[in-house]
Amino acid sequence: MTQQKKDREEGEKMIEEAVDLFIQGAGKVSGALLGMINKVGGQIYALLFLEDEPLSLDDIGERLGVSKSNVSINIRMLEEYNLVRKVWVKGSRKDFYAAERTYPKKVIRDFLDKIRGSLTDAITTIERTRAKVTEAKVAAGKQDRKRAEFILQQVNLIGLFYYAANKFFDDFFAGKPVNVELLRQVIMNPDDLNQTRD
Image 1: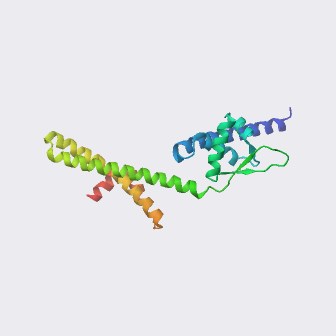
Image 2: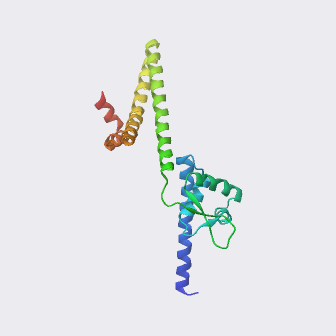
Image 3: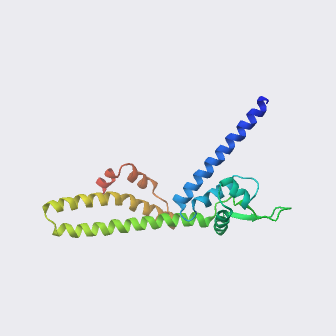
């Protein structure tokens, strides 16, 4: 075997390893972060995204080690999000699919809405906890009052992040300038920000 052939085979192997890395990572990200697209769906999209030719359901299943029925279910879901499209391949009766190269607005909007919903849930929890502890503090004995004050301090501290993040998204969606520095300050040193607010 010539050195040139060895180099070519090593290069092909490294490319396949890089593709596998991307596919595995995309599966984790889509399942954990996006929520509406599961791990297999993320892997299918990642595979098609890095392929310059359309793939059939069989090709996808074989490449990912996933059943054809599982691929079919996830392909339909990806089609609904406009992440993949069916492609006609001359001389074949099989269904072939290719990735949409521009990330659809619906996926991005759903992702941002999910974050905003989580922020709203967190703020509601913080406010309800603060109200309950404040109420309890009035009726509590000296030792319990001390604990209530500590809890309030901690809830207020964590609240700084969620309020700053919520304001960031409110301003972003309203088309206003976003205060990145406020969010950065809360993340880097919330104690300093807390003191400036007192």
